[in-house]
Image (cartoon, rainbow, N blue to C red; front, side, top):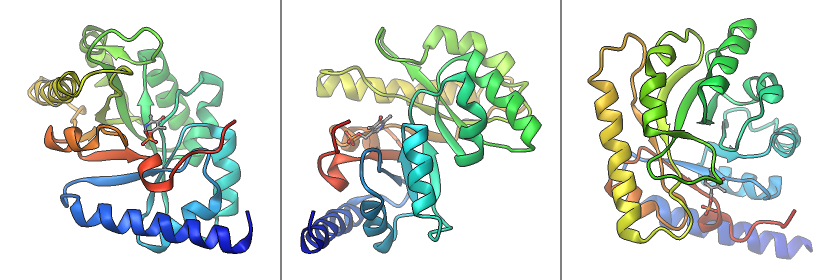
Length: 232
Ligand SMILES: *Cc1c(COP(=O)(O)O)cnc(C)c1O
């Protein structure tokens, strides 16, 4: 890209963000998903006020964070599947993990966070309808895991996160988001000491208006803000 092309690109990103910000309710926190976008795209979004950025691949994220170290008030959100052997790195680089997708992973994050003296915030990734290719708790798995999740002392399970299966209809998507919200309310009425779900991380470029209508508190937007991603 030439210098003037990248300036045009920054202008386009900023125009899209300004337009979106004008339409978002104040209760919704916008996570800009910068995976497979260059550091310059993050700078452009930062310049118009965004401070929350989401990444799904650890190695790429850590390199980008190093390039952006001068932007010290960014909050980084990990949104991809996390392998157990990368938990330590993830905790060091991300205060938020939206993809706590199994009890085993939750235990591991809790254990390493204790060793590091960290208190990451986590969203439990839940699949409302079966979706074999995706990670996440089924509703019954999540319910069964609650007593143990409630005992964790360092991973703070503050949210639920969901990604509807590919090709779900708008009505199906709406129902999934509503069910996630109902599940959060059910958990919050349970006998738990620590668990308290105040975050609903749901809604991507293709479905975020439905997520907001259902009560999303965090939306994760990539292409709507930044345009197409670089291919791997
Ligand atoms: C890539 C990704 C997003 C953003 O997707 P867009 O369709 O580009 O908005 C949101 N959430 C997760 C978990 C992702 O992996």
